[in-house]
Structure formats: structure tokens, C-alpha cells
Length: 518
Image (cartoon, rainbow, N blue to C red; front, top):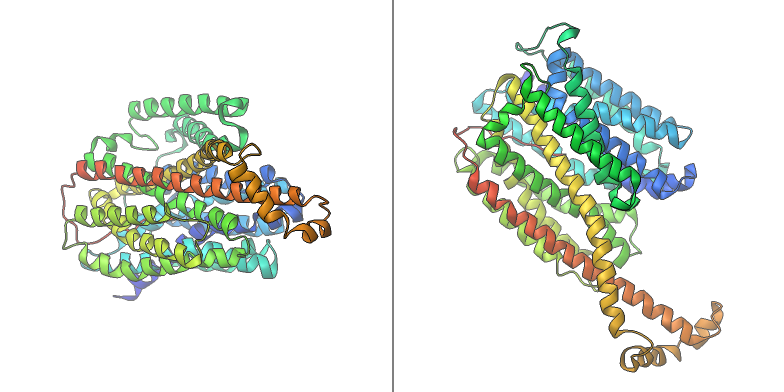
């Protein structure tokens, strides 16, 4: 491997890590940020929501922007804007400015992953592409686990502003590498401003932005009870419908939707959608489970639960990358789906007695499944395209994976709420003041030993104390039952990935694997 290839890998890896880590590093600092800024949970959630909406808008058009502005300038500029916005977030004096600069971060960050992926694909000869992408994947797979762990450590020791400031030296390094090593493509559009598809860009911003808002804020705002959600849903349908119609009508669209005529792209994006639902919903659900069942664990300890699984993914990336060119990629994806299914089913059997070691095993199994999914799926899809189409397809793959994550998290909030309401009613039928076997016997058994303790905490009636303890146990059981039901829903979605896997029909056999991560 020559020096130029090493530098290209380093450039793509560092730029990708910037975006990957920043998408997850903020979550663990939310409680601290609320207290420091004086914001409610509903208000502070816009720090994440604004970033995701802006990121989703740019992802599908990153390739088009690169061809308009020149890949070298666009990629380097996006890194510098992302770095400057990170610094501004760390210095933000209030919530409004913090949200504004997070949106700016999202707009710049949307360019980093698709451009890095396309850069890797085009820069390496076929005989070295597999090794390069595997090395790139090693660094990329560390990001999702490093984000929460690093975020917890920095927040606990240096304050929440440090989670943004840490991007500054990394961003400057990435920008320097990008400017020195990235080259413009020979298929860039040198047309004047009149050729910019402003109407298509407007429809995309309205449609995707409103859709992402509905998914991110739906459960918090009460779904269809909210005027804002109903309005955004209407604009999302109108915007996306108008965008599809307009892009298929004009000769030079910002997103070439005609590529979806190819079976491999239609099936590949559906696989990415299902993968995004599994990946992001579980990444969001596990910390919630830990906080409810193991409240004594810190944010740093919770983040560390994901580290072993991520290390397994990193260790398997290179071997899977080496065999991907020799084995039918559909077989590898099948192994990944079955392994991922096993991890989700294991999570469906968590109980109130589950400890960190019970959680580690399914997460490790899930980590083992990731290389068998990311590499061959992208091998089958991206390997079918070249030139400007390659960048477009890379952005589409990233976009559908992220939309899958948004759908997964939104569905998680909704399903947990609805499952909890039903399970609470079911348990309440058996555990209430009119049921002597379940309620009164528990109160009498627990009440006497707690007589002194109840007095010391201000509860003159030990029966009241025992009833509150019983309610706490019921609430915990309701959550665990709801979590198990949620895992079964995710298991069905993962199994549904077998349908597009069966339908996908790649026409080429490729010598190098593709990696896509977030």
C-alpha cells in the first residue's frame, strides 16, 4: 500500500469519525445541559432534533453539491464549517444559539460520510480496495461506541461544552488532510448558477425537513393531537411528492431518482432501512433499559456496555472484507440478518434481575452481525455504479439508513408508551386494593418491617410506604414487559429484511467490499 492510499484512508476515516461521534456524543450530556442552560427536556431535545433534520436534508444531495462546487473545496469546506460550528456550540451563551449552531453542524456533517465513502471507492485499485475499505471500517465502527463513552467521560470531568470543543483539533487535522489529498473528479458540473435546480432543492428541504420533524417530535408532541405534527405531515407528503415528480421531469436533477429503476438500488435501500431501524432503535433502547433497571450505573458505565460489541465489529471487519470478494454477498448478508435476529431475541428475554453481563452478550452478538451486513450490502449496491451516479447512490444509502434510525426511534417512543399503558392496566387488574392475595398480603408482609423506616422518611403510615414500594415494582415490571414486546417488534422488522435480500439481484461480482456506517 503506497503513501497516497494511506493518506486517503486517514482522511476519510478522520472526517467520518467527526460526524459519527458527534451524532451520538451529545445524548449522554443532555441532563447536564438542561441544568446548565436552564432548559426543559422538550426544549433541549432540539439540540438533537435540529442536527438530525439538517443532516437528513444534505445526505441525499451531498454528491450533487460536490460536483457543483468541486469535491476538494466542498469536502474541505464542509469539514471547516463543521469544526467552526462545533467551537461555536461549545461557546454558545444560550439555548437558541446552541440550536442554531447544531443545525449548521448538521448541514456540514451531511457531506462527510457520503463523500468519504465515494472517495474510498474511487481512489483505490480493485486489488487493494478490499483492504482499504476494511481498514476504513475499523475506524468507522469504533465511532458509535466511542461517542457515548467519550461523551460521558468529558461531561463528568470537563463539563458539557467539552464534547463540542474536542472536535476542533480533530476537525483541523481532517481539513488539512482533505485539502492535501482529495482531488476533484473529472465529471464535475461546471455549469453556471442558472442550472441549479432551486425548485427541486426547495421541495427536498420542505419534504425531508418536515418528515424528519414528524419522526423526531411525534411522540413528544402527541402525534396527531398536535397541530404542528399534522401540518408538518401534510407538508412532508406534498414536499416529497412534488420533489419526486419534479426530479423525474427535469434533465439535470439534484438527485437522480431514475437510478431506482435498478433492482439492486431498490432492494439495497430497503435493506439499509431495516438495518437502520435495528441499529439505532436498540442503541437508543438499551440505555433507557439500563437507567430503569440499573439506576446506579453512570453515563460512562452505560456507554462502556457498547464497547465490547464495537470491538468485535472492528475485529471482524478485516476478515469479512477479505472473504467478501470470494463468497456470494447474499450469503454473508443472510448470516448477518440471522445473527442480528439472535441478538434481538436475546434482548427480548431481559428481566428485572438482568445485570450488565446479561446485556453484554446480546450486544456482542449484534456487534458480530454488523460487518456481515454493512460490507456485503454496500458491495452489492455501490459496486453497480460509477462516476457521478456512485456519489448519488452513496448518499441515498446513508439517507435511508438514517431515516430507518429516525423511524426506529420514533416507533420506539410510541410503542413503549402504548405497550406500557396496556401492560399497566393488565397488572392493575391483578394488583389492587380489592385483591387480598396480591395486594393486602404484600402490604402486610412488607409493612411491619418498614414501620421505623417509614416514620424516618415522613410517612406516618407504613401501609402507605409499602403501597408506594409496590407501585415502584409494578412500574418496573410494566417497563420490562413493554421492552420485551418492543424487541419482538424489532425482531419482526429484522426478519423482514429477508424479503429485499431475496429480491436483490446484483449483476456484478466485485473484488472489494464497501463499508457504510454512522
